[in-house]
Image (cartoon, rainbow, N blue to C red; front, side, top):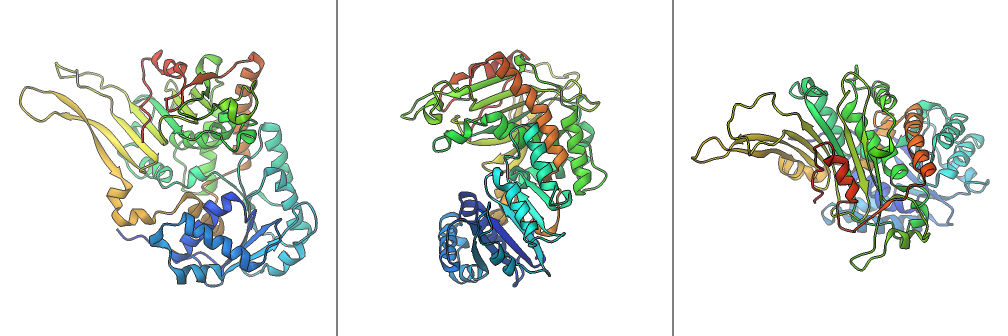
Length: 484
């Protein structure tokens, strides 16, 4: 299998917050990887913009250090790094004043794609959008990329949408959710819509339930003050898990087109039922293994913010009526793992006398680590002694299936930034989609706040609170084990 890399158009990409953590860890190393893959034209440029007063050379040196730290050694070539750094520039910018904007305007070209990545706090999105237009820098074809969190509730999301809409058209706004850039997430669409094998079975008649898990081993150390204002519901469910849910549950779009795909995702969000208190479990990790608790890290001994949440969700439409979707995400859990598991129903009748070995068919899509998917099917256990059943996986681990090419699969940020340059919004959230997600999320949060619910404590390196297990057990189901 030979991968095809098609160069994008020439571009000027400005990264506001170009000296920040996200730019250093993900965006700039990812751009270097796209450069060495041959995806950038010779006249494309990357311009870092931040408050610090740096020269081009100092900025280039910091990017070289980031490449050294975050790009594998076998991808670091001194000549290629030097060629990449040569296309980097830097401008000191005052996001809320006039400093640096004239210099930035002098750097930008009109005959190439203009893209502006807002890798800054959401409070600065409006200021940047205003100044890009008031200083005559961004043209009518320019694209802006905005990071999450996109609001913290429906009111703030609407206000932010309205602010950006004053300066840019919806077709120019790219709201990024890096989960949608993961290779396996996109393969979910390919599995569903490019194979007749699954789509006829992709409905409540054949699917018993769906589990979506995003588990992390890290706590909130170092970012407790920020995290305590959001919690797992706002930080993960409203965006990342919601997007995964939409891709699983959406109807086939009429075409693989940005608005066609996003129209179908929006229908899923609008069909979500309200979630009652009995279908929600919230938790906070306790101290253990020489590490502090959530309350230690957030520095508020009375905090009721959740570091873990599990929900049972229903979608009221013809395809999914009666099939529950179980969502869970949390910090300081047993293992780092993100996966989607689609569990199919039992056969209507078993022809085998001994059904002790019977297990459900499960399609598992692994997002991280060890990206890939497998389908758990039943076979006869080898050997004499009658018809004994055993469950085995039909495995497609990317590293095994693609061989060395698996190492060249682009990181989510690499893919998404290149999609911005191409003008492809398929993997980005639309404004009405964001607002619909908050419209569903807000009443859930308001409910536990009004009730005064406190999160349950759970041990670090566990699978979460005990009541999360009961959320499944009372329905006669079990969570899949969290493991690397």
